Image (cartoon, rainbow, N blue to C red; front, side, top):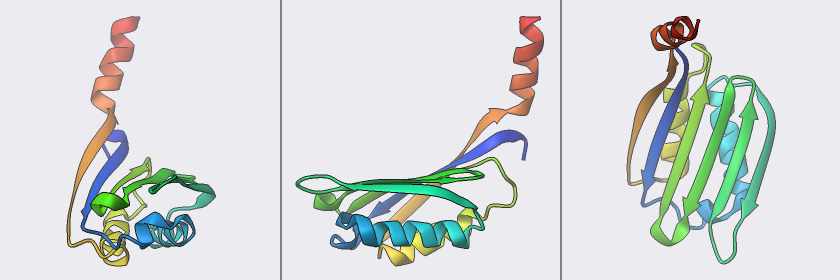
Length: 126
């Protein structure tokens, strides 16, 4: 990894509406995705909004897994952040596509804190 971390931004469309509006079931799915990714779970918190929608965050030793849902649109936005080369975000991504029954999906990876840039920035300050 040539960065301090990888931030995976996942877009899930036309998901199972009942599932993405249920904080208890969604937490189970997200915890399973963390397990599949070989992440080490520290703590999780999930909240149902009124009249609909869920936000949840799982703190993992490698960083975090987060989800925000809009059941009225069948949409879920997922962020996976890792500072470890060992975490298998692709396995977690494919699991979430299947578990949430997303009819279409995409992801992109953003490198956070690229080491070459950080090294130059630190040297420029001295």
